[in-house]
Length: 188
Image (cartoon, rainbow, N blue to C red):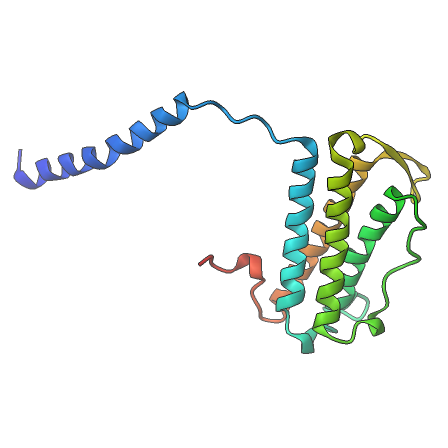
């Protein structure tokens, strides 16, 4: 055997053995229990809220009224719709009257106005989820759209999915504007 070959074999073994030992240590460690249903729901709620907030903070304010086509909502209208929809969940779960349509664009003059609204809608939903806990998520409310009882936790998941749909649409708005969405940028 040649000297470079032996060096390569020794170097490889030196690098692989510690990794293998770490894998063995993980196998011997106790497996962490599953997170509670309310924690999983809250983490997902906060994650989509974080993504939409980042877009509200990042997208150029002078492009807030950008629409891919005249028939579509503008960038800001998309965010107002997704964030405003949270109050259909929050208000219904709190026994309050649900909103009547989307928040109006002319009520949000600045980036700060929009960002504050997006953050508040997700913070209010997060507080509701925390206050319900695992047990309270099984309580029911009347879904004003389907006119039937639904579990609060199930209803919340629907609004997370709804926000995710609008997040996907907003990614397209970014790309059509020649921009890269915050979530798609390389991590530092």
